[in-house]
Image 1: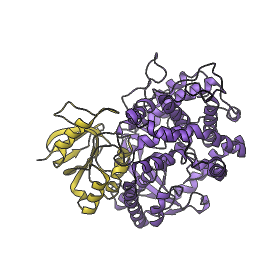
Image 2: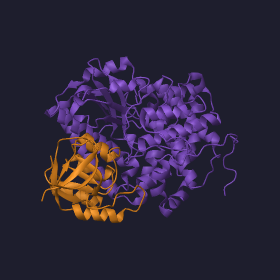
Image 3: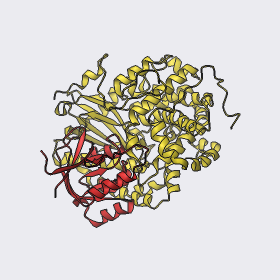
Image 4: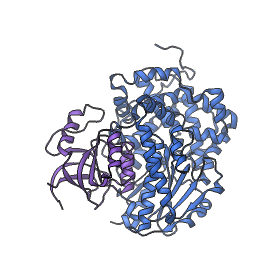
Amino acid sequence: MSDGKIIGEGYNCFETDKRAQGTVLYLPDPNAVISLIQSGKLKEHVLLAQGGTTTFLAPALSMGAIGVITLSGAPESHLGILSREFQIPCIMTAYLLSSEARYVTGGENDAHFDEVIGALNGKNVSLNCTDGETGLIELLD
Amino acid sequence: MAADYLQRYEENDDGLRFQELVYTGNFVDMDPVPDGILGDRIMKSRAVSGVLERVEIEAVRDDEFTIAELNDLNNYLAWNIWDVLVMRATEGASGMIPRQEYELLALMHEFYRWPELLNMTTAEIGAQGVLDLGASSRSEIGTKINAVHDWAIGAAGFGMGRCALLALEVIGPDDYIEESSSILKFMQRVLWGKRQDGWILNSQDRYRCQIHTPEFLDSLTPAIEPIESGSPPHDALIQFNAAAELLSFLDHFDCRLGLGDTGPYQLPNGNVLIIRDLFCNEDAYHWSDVCDHEGVPYCYTVMLEIDPQGMGLQEIRVNDISTTFTRPKNYIPNVVGGAIFVREKWDTPIEDVYPVPVAELGPRLTGIQNATFKLYTKLSRMSRRQLIMNGMYVYYVGMILPHLRRAGTYEKACVDYDFWEIDQRISNHYYEIGKRDFAKVTVPNKIFSGAGYLPFSENADRGRSKYFWG
């Protein structure tokens, strides 16, 4: 059952009834990750990262991140594996339903990334990860 | 959903498809090949030699492969690499560690440098000694002589390394045949010694890595504590497993050398056991000092007992890079038992490996979390060049470090063979791979896709190596 308007989707890393709900926070670099950890507000946010690798979000995952969205990667990526192990709902290679743009492996993706980041950053969302293949990003307000 | 995963082990079962993509490789005029059990069967059927079937020990003791055998191994490894890594190719830039760059440099470095290091080791301990290296892991946990490292000798050092050099156009398809044979022979011997069933790769055996002897398993399983899904002990075990796995990734620069699964083992009660080594503190790497400071040992081994009926298990794969995938994907809620073992150092005698009760994991989890944050902070202050060079060592040194250490040839490799030096050709390639997006494009499009693994010519001169460079 949907809690809000579905605005995006992507690969679902694992099936779970857990709902990650919070304000999307885009993390552009490691310093942003460190600042978030030190702020004590980690659990208020669904984290948005560009890459699908795990090291970039390492301390956030270890300290209890509630949900993750990435703009590339797949459940077989290291971040996909670790989100399953931590049971952190995670949607990878997310895209907007309102746009035709999609991630291209090895391609030029900057405009696509900017569009998704602009649309999601700061929004209150819920991650619906019940389906085995596709995760849904629902807008709550 | 009823669990029918045991059907995957029946002779004519094709297994499930874990992805929609298909593989072509060098078989451009033939039907594309899918992933999984069916893909393995098709690849074996396309082999010219018998090297992809169960191999007798006499053939493993032979010192060289024929050209046909080399091509069969090249094609199979290309499919196998695609099978386990093609979806990882979508992950893009790290934001932390320039992984595609360090991977490319390391792979090329391995192809150039490993042949003489592996030949030296074989000369020191003999072919049987190399087989015994593999066999040593049958009765040990917390050892890096494991699936991913053994696979990497051939798949990374030969397959991907040669593929990268071909893509960079600094070697031709018929160069370095003897060296290729040296790398693959070492891989075959270690893997054969480890499995001892005639296969060398998990994918050849329906993704099983059941290497431990029943006697050894019997010595471990009494430590398994039953735990109830959703209970505090379940949460503690799962959190610990995930945090240790994450640190193992980070300590190994976001690569899978820190992780080693074996199994699935069938328990007497019908449940499935996965044994997972998590190498959280590799003392060969200077950045692991933060792990020392937090009291993190070399390896935590996590035993996970999974209820296949509870999750309706359809297929379980322990692939050749030591990682477990299941369908359905989420096995964690159906972990119904677990145990943790500690190996303090890489050379701690197996008799001194000890269990830790789940109830006592708290302080150890804190140590892992602190080490993760400190290591992350340390890495975030490294320059791009430092990150690439360090990552390059994690692959180039780390993939054969356990074999050389166990063989007693590591010191000789360092002193007599400049193991930790960087070959001048690799230093030059450092600049080349940054041009025209070579690293960003080549890794996913040539290496992970299986498209760049050119065959050797049938009548190529085995001694032809590097006499003309132009």
